[in-house]
Length: 501
Ligand SMILES: CC(C)(COP(=O)(O)OP(=O)(O)OC[C@H]1O[C@@H](n2cnc3c(N)ncnc32)[C@H](O)[C@@H]1OP(=O)(O)O)[C@@H](O)C(=O)NCCC(=O)NCCS
Image (cartoon, rainbow, N blue to C red):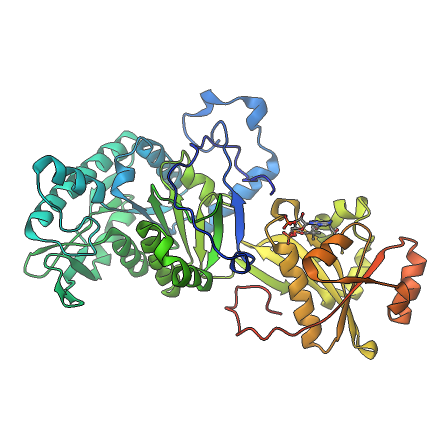
C-alpha cells in the first residue's frame, strides 16, 4: 500500500477509534480506491495562526503542492458548500478546528451553509431530565416530550456554533428556512412530531449568503400553522443542497468514513454506493448508512460530490477539499474518474508523466512524433481533471490482434487498482474492435500482467511479423505476454465507471 500523498503538508490526525469496519467482497472493492488510514504530524499552511507549530523541515511545501491546491480555488469561488455537523461533532473538542477550516474556506470566497444535528445533546438531556427519548435522530417517532427536549438540544448546539463562529470572526445567523410537514404514519406507526422537509426558503438563504453571512440551520422545521417538527439533519442537508444548487455536501460525524477492514474507502460512484447499501446495510453503522443513502440521493439529484468525514480529525475539511486523494469517503456523481482519448494538446503532459518510467527502462522511449503518429491509440485516465495514468492500444487488424502499450499509473495513484482498470479497459476496447488476443511487452512488469491481468508468456515469434521485427530491433529483449480477449457481458456501467471504452 502506498503512502498518503495529499498536496497539503502532513496534518495532525488522531488515530481512529471505534470506527465501523465492514468486509466488502474483493470483487466489489476492486473498483474502489482504498487507502490505509495514516497518521500525520504538523498542520496545514492554510490554517491561520498555526505556523508556530511547524517543523519547517517536515512541512516545506513544494511549489507543485501549492499549484495542486490553488487549482481548486477558482473552481470553488462563490460556490456553495453545505457543511452538515452531527450533534456529537458540535460537542467535540475539534469544533474550534473545524470552524477555523471554515474561516479558510470563507476567505477563498466559498459560500458556506451549516446544517447541524442534535442527537447527542438530546440523548444527554433525556438522561439528565429522566425523560425517555422516543427517537434521537429525527427519523422515528418523536413524541411531545422528545420534541420539547429536541428544541432545547438544537438551541444548545446553535449557541455553541454561534460562539465558535464569532471567535473566528465569521458572521453567522440562525436561518429558519425549513418548511416541514408531518412525516405521517409509516408502516402503520404514527411518527407524531417527526417532520419531513417540504420546502427550503431559498430566498432567505440567498440573502444571507449575499451579505457574507453563514446561515445556520437547525434540525427543526415549521409548518404554515406554526407547528414545530423534528427533522433529520442529514435530510435537511440534502434538501438545502439541492434547493441551493450546492457544489458539495460535507457530512461530519464521529463515525466519519466508510471502512473496509482496516482501510478507508476513499471514493465511491453512486452505483457503487447503492451496491454497498444493498449488500452491507445490516453490518454498517446506522449513521454511515444514513449518510451513504443521502449521499447517493444527493448525487442522483445533481450534487456533484458528497464527502463523509471524521469530524474529530484535525483539519479534516481542508485535507479533504484540497487534495486529489482526500482523507474521507467521497461519493461522486460526475466524471471524477474518466477515461478519454488523448488529444494533441495532451502530449506534453503524457511525456512528463512517463518520463521517469522511460528513464528507468520500464517503458520504451517514444518521441513526440511517434506519439503523434499513433495519437488515436492513446487513452488517458483522469482523476479530478488531473492526469493520473495512460495506456495505448495498438491494433493489428489483419492478425485480429491488439497490443497494450505505454501502461502507466502516476506514482501518487499506484496501488489503488488503476493499473488493473487500465488493463481491463484495454482488453474491452480490443475485444470490441474485433481483436481476439491482446499482447503486452514488458521488461519489468511482466509479473503484473501475468498475476493481475491473466496474461501468459509466449514466444516473440507469436507476435504479428511487423511487431516481431520491431521487438528484435529494439534490443530490449522484453518478455511477450498474451491473453485471449473476452468481451465483458456485465450490464453497462454508469458513465463515470471504468472500464467502459
Ligand atoms: C505496473 C503499474 C501500471 C501498476 O499500476 P498500479 O495502479 O499500481 O496497479 P494496481 O493498483 O492495479 O495493482 C497493484 C498490484 O500490482 C502489483 N504490481 C505493481 N507493479 C508490479 C510489477 N512491476 N510487477 C509485479 N507486480 C506489480 C502490486 O504489488 C499490487 O499487488 P497487490 O494488489 O497484490 O498488492 C504501475 O506500477 C506502473 O505504471 N509502472 C511503471 C510502468 C510499467 O512498468 N508499465 C508496464 C509496462 S507497459
